[in-house]
Figure 1 (tube, rainbow, N blue to C red):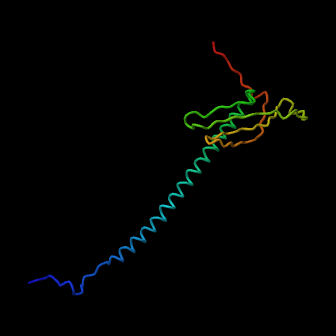
Figure 2 (figure 1 turned 90 degrees about the vertical axis):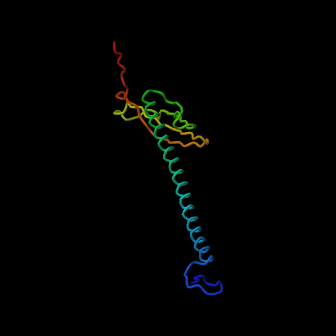
Length: 145
């Protein structure tokens, strides 16, 4: 018995036409484009946020160095952050604020400090703050014999 069907007879078998497959692929491609674009935007936002967080952390480190420098009577200093953050450098400058008229604060010195972070691309971020120094903050170095 011959089970071959002639080409000119309509088929009772169901299937997708080429046009339907192309439309489905176009919809899938459009969806993939939207997802990849959203992923790229999220990645760019993550990188930008990471740079901002690093800059903030480095600026806080610079401010801490400045506070310790004022206590150690170093009113200006500069340096870098080593190989972990190549291209970043820091500096600070402290200025005495003058004498206090308060008799309870005669032994306290006040300073205004400008701490600066210099990024690898040359952008500067500055933080200005106040700090103080008093005799209790001075440390004593003991030499062991």
